[in-house]
Length: 157
Image (cartoon, rainbow, N blue to C red; front, top):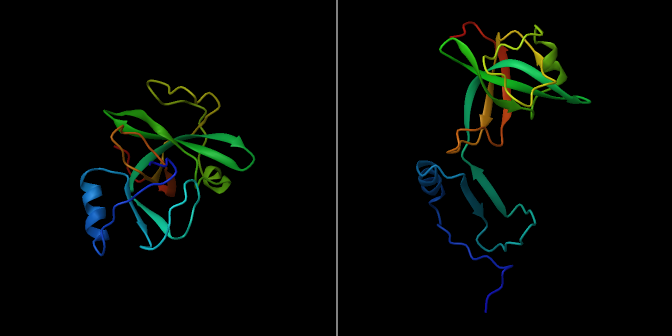
C-alpha cells in the first residue's frame, strides 16, 4: 500500500557536519536537518525542518543595470577574459536604488558579444566590483543568488 503523499527520510544522528561535507564533496545542493520526532507535510514549511545550502561567493564586474520598476533593479554582471568583458548574468536580490546611484553611466555597451535580454540596460563604467553569493551548480550558471556588497575596483584585469 503506497501513498504518494508520504515521504520516508533516512537520517544520520549527530553527524550533520560530516553529512554536509560529504554533500559538498559530491557537489550536491546541501542537506536538510530536522527534529527527530517531527513530521513532514508536503508543501508546508515548518521550523522543524531546515535546509543547509552549499553556497559560494565570487566577485563580478558591474557592467550595467536594468530598472525593473519601482525600486527594483538588476545589475548586469561580467568578468574580464583576454581583455574583453564577458557577460555572466544578472543579480536582483539585494540591489537597491542606492546601489545604482553610485554607478557612473556611460551609455556604451562594452561587451564584444552583446547579451540578449539587456535591451533596457543602462550601461555603466566597469569600475565597480560586487560580491555575489550563489548556489554552485554543474551548469556554471548563477542560481539563487544575491549581492553581498559592491565596492570600487582598484584594478581590472
